Image 1 (cartoon, rainbow, N blue to C red):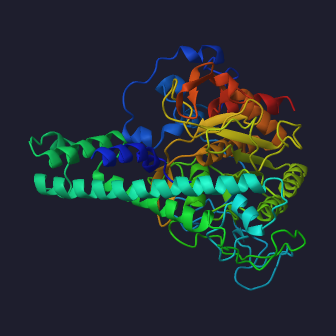
Image 2 (cartoon, one colour; image 1 turned 180 degrees about the horizontal axis):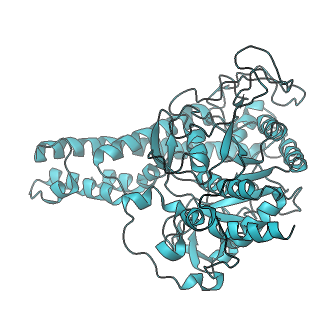
Image 3 (spheres, one colour; image 1 turned 45 degrees about the vertical axis):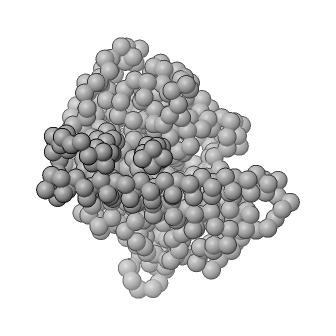
Length: 538
């Protein structure tokens, strides 16, 4: 999931161009009183921006998960058990400085000997497995349907219309991006000359007094860019340039009917072929960053003086590369879930999704298989601002709003760091039946490849936050089952009745309680207290 900041400026770009330890037995934050909290009106500090998901709603008036409070008041210096969390995603930079000590190693496998020492079918799977092989770019699933030429498929006409609509949309966005990037680059050059500073500040821009209309327009562009949470025009240029790469990939690969990205040699429509890919779980290029960011949210070293704090200690990340730059294949995901379950994972994070799934039954069967191994799956709800009770998304543990196939799957929506009506991320999907809980997902600071760090947003970031809570519970209360952990997370969240905007539309306002099954936001502090109570009653 790429940054959403650059997408937010598209409309403005167009307008500019056209015009120019011990535990307590009582939860200390009463759920029924939480809605009486004052709104936070001040801007977040830089430290808060990089850490907001761990803060406490009652103490900080920021809708975080009270992670720091859980460590300070409950976990303290207690020793927990190691928990294996499988991250099914893009490649993970397992050499990242902030993930050292947090990467799973298959001790039954002798590295580099070319032998399947543990007889699990995967040769030299030391840190996980790569079901994509050397592949990276891929089509979207509905584009694959068109490429198949199967005009008798019941969704063929729908797919054809959607592909045309998406292609036209992204072609238009690409034009706006290119034009606005030129405008902002020109503004940056002009302001450098005017201030005689390469790294001029907001204050320098505000101090400029001029009657030159062109320079006035550049100043207006700069001031708007600053309102978009960029510290400089150069930061905006970098972000927009990255967005252009994503959009170009969307057009050239994801929406290209003639593109073929699969490089594993297997038939993705044949589940008999299971042992393909390779053991290289790392990204194939620096821009393949999603999996590294997700892994850091769960397990980056805590308080080690490096960039980010993970939610959970005592975690080993099992890296399973199965999500390309495009839509994942159902076969890869089904086998990845089974691989994780068979090799000791207790939690699986699945920060991906799509709306067409030709073999969704394979994935549901794998979810049931994981349940038989007592594995909890934590899943991102998706980023289209849609009601999932009226729109199918995959992977899922049910067909539509029908009965769930198992009780080990939890779907997570995304929150922004602003308690009140704007609390639900504009992109976040929701659903009274098909979304279970909400957690911090907007502009989350975490690890990026090659020892870097960045803030990006999506339900992809909210899911590993909840996976981190699940890992804490399973570390300190190892006798609790996956269904019990799921229930604890849902029951212990903070219940809110606040009215919020959904889909980023000011005209679409709903009570927060209507957006998920639990009606709550995840809370690590409360979850640990309830886990203690549940464990005592076993």
